[in-house]
Figure 1 (tube, rainbow, N blue to C red):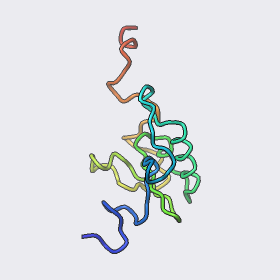
Figure 2: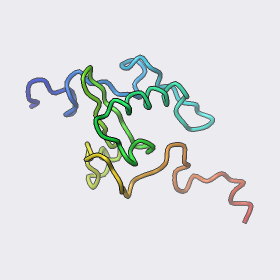
Figure 3: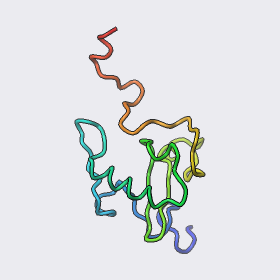
Figure 4: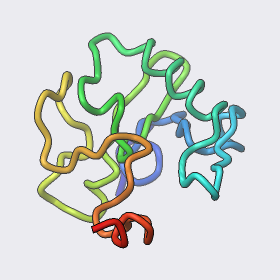
Length: 120
């Protein structure tokens, strides 16, 4: 049972996700060839990050970052928290050290290009 005003899954009421094109109205499409968010998605992400009261630290450039925005606030959520309880859902900012940090645009471990393995 949720408290009054809480959004779905414990998210703040009235919040939208930066990656949800329909909800945020700012993109959300991904370039499947590059495996990265489209440029306008990155612009929306940067805009929301500038609204934070404190810097996000490592989260600002992490692939696991989920931004939730309401008319008055922006919340930083860790996407790893959904599958790994070791990660806080809403980390204390700024994050200066994180075992799950992966730079935005970086290939996931084990997903190296085939030609990179042939170079050895």
